Image (cartoon, rainbow, N blue to C red; front, side):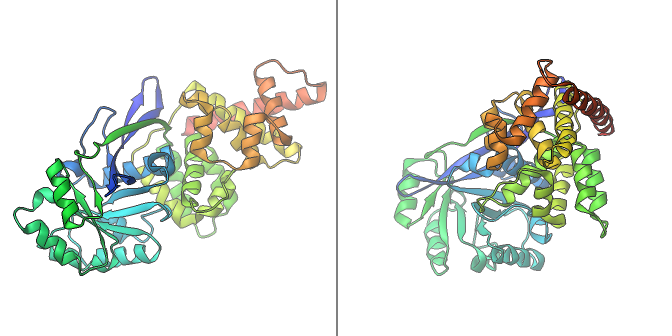
Length: 412
């Protein structure tokens, strides 16, 4: 993933991920390797050229995959192969997403010591699938990982003569699936098929493509404030929730991270509080640290301010109407994200994966929450026909929301 700041809206970026299909012997796509892309026109990444893509690129791809696009949007029903560098294996909390649908690639660019080997085993026991990238038998430190790996990827351009056949024969003594990388010609494909490779990846089959979307970057200040809170053993969900609320982008990222972490569950989260409870402090800390590492900036754009004012207005009125204020805040914020991000509203809903009740309120303005959202919209657009008491409450909530939104966005 790379990102381009959108002119005039410093908190909005176009983010990019490269993906190259991995196919089986029948040429059916079984998954995609997700690759770093610095911009929309980029055709290569460090991982493809043999240069260590680094922790920053790894962080960027993870953030884009799980909190800007959503894994399903990138890989459909297939697997997402994600390159990981050493820190993601040795830190117990560095991989914050769920194992369903992902394959963690151990890059060839760092040595496998005892810490890395223990981390690979821990992740495999947690349900993750592991792949060894660019495997060669002369890398003796990687042989110790074969018992924990499901896939072994072999760059066929690195092996001459009988080297490829010998490598395949030796790997057949292990319970792994072989992926042929750099399949560049019809002859490459024929040779790898004859040798019994299960999966194939390369330009002869399908070239990588770059996919892009618009993302809202959380304020580094807000992210650091959350990190500071997370070290407090007496921290309450209510305190954490209020800090997350101060940054609209962080609110959205937390919801997306929770839904990504719960990818195997049917339930989707409709409020920050639910998302925070589901993530827990350790996983939330991992996500926020990734956001800080990505050096995301804050936003004071007028469109974002408008969305936050609407969200806060809904929250304040919900408390009076016996609705959940946290869900009302989410509804108000999401209802303007199409304008903030400049993308169709159905894409916003798909990206967030929100729960049924909240989704219906947003799409059809149905139920008490939908009715509240409709009243707030009418009031803010100047087309309300409320009674005197409701108008007074609306005006009060709106003024308070403006003060709150202006102050919190300024601090961010």
